Image (cartoon, protein in one colour):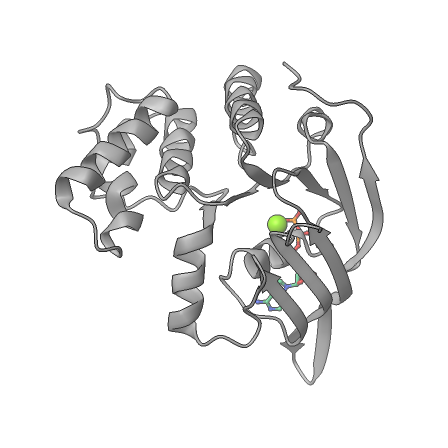
Length: 237
Ligand SMILES: Nc1ncnc2c1ncn2[C@@H]1O[C@H](COP(=O)(O)OP(=O)(O)OP(=O)(O)O)[C@@H](O)[C@H]1O
Ligand SMILES: [Mg+2]
């Protein structure tokens, strides 16, 4: 028996209305990602990487095709049911962090759990675990503006992890960071992968793509290349 893929796209299309015409950002895209894969999405600017991540993360819906998330068809869900599917399965790390500026580090990380029926003490315990994981247990009361860029990114990662999602999605999660901060965040992703996490990262950086076991190159909204790296086992920076 083959296991259900965590993500299955079949003939996905996404178009944007531009003036009188349409721009096709994703074109008849099919893709299967299994549990515990570690995938880099690469390709030139404008090739559709963020559009694809937004669909995978249930932040947007396709115009055509099927998206099965853990076996459930999500392409046709309305906004509320899409939000539930997202909260249950996905941790999304935005390039621009998307933290609440007036909420503390702890409050930011707790936020995805507020939508769940979970006791406050349990929510806090989970948020503390996630912040410890990213090395920020000493910054609970800081506001995002009182953190460095790398620390803010780690808060965003803790927030993505706090729901213990099956799938971790990152759109350029190290895009604005220096090389040593990038290295420490990649070590964290490597460790999560070794524990069984499914990880999909958009990146411009070859060093990051090299961490991943599979590299999918988009060109003009299509998959131009889908390559698996030889070798297994966790690699280190
Ligand atoms: N809301 C929108 N309306 C119209 N066109 C859009 C919209 N969002 C994206 N596009 C177009 O779709 C294409 C793909 O955009 P996308 O953001 O997915 O690219 P990307 O691969 O993430 O690029 P980058 O590496 O620069 O982040 C681009 O040509 C972009 O102009
Ligand atoms: Mg992008």
